Length: 236
Image (cartoon, rainbow, N blue to C red; front, side):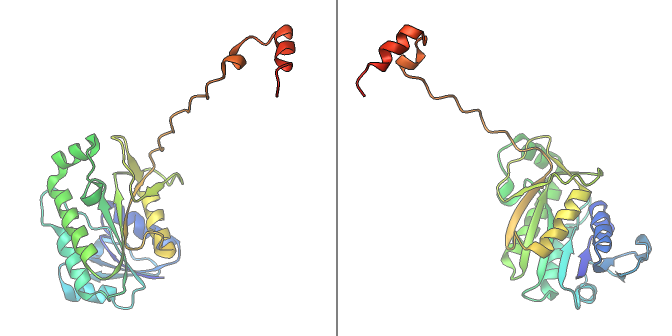
C-alpha cells in the first residue's frame, strides 16, 4: 500500500513510519526538515509545511491512504486543525484517512478524573484536537479517528483494546508500538470506517460476581437420611 504520512517526525509518527516500512508499505512523508528522517527503501521524503496545500498535494498524489499523527506542542499554532484543513482541501473525496487524536475530546469527553485533569493540563492541545475532529467529521473522506490516552515507549504487547465507547481510568495508557500496529491494521480492515475509536492496553473491568440464586427452604434444611425418606414420599 502507498501511504501519505503527516507528522512522521513526532514521537508517535516515527514509530508508525517504522512499522509501515517493516510491513512493506511505500511511504511518502511530509516534513519541514528532510534531514530529520533517515533515508530508507520505500520511503520518499517530501520537504514542506503541512499548512501549504501545494506541499500536501505532492505528498498525497497517488496515495492509497493518508495517515496523520500530527501533534500540537503546548506552545505553538493549532497544527492539527490547520494541517487537517490543508489535507482535506486537496485529498480526493473518497480518500482513506486515519488520524491520531486524544482520548477526552468530543464524544469521549466523559466526566472522569482522567478527562478533567487532561483538560486542566493540556487545554490548548485538546481544543486543537477537537477542532481537527470536527473538520474530519464534516469532510467527505472515509475517515477513522483513533483516540489514544497517555502514550509510552514500551514494546508491542498485543493486549490493545479498542472500542467506540470505552471509558478509561486514570491509569490508562498505550504503547506507541501497539498504537502503530492498530493504525496500520485499521487501514486494511476498515473496521472503524467513519467512526472514532478509543484504544488502550488498560485491562477491562471484570464483571461483578453474580450471587447464587437462593435455595428453597426445603433445600436449605440438613439432608439427613430420615429427612430424605420423608421428602421422597411427597406427592409429585
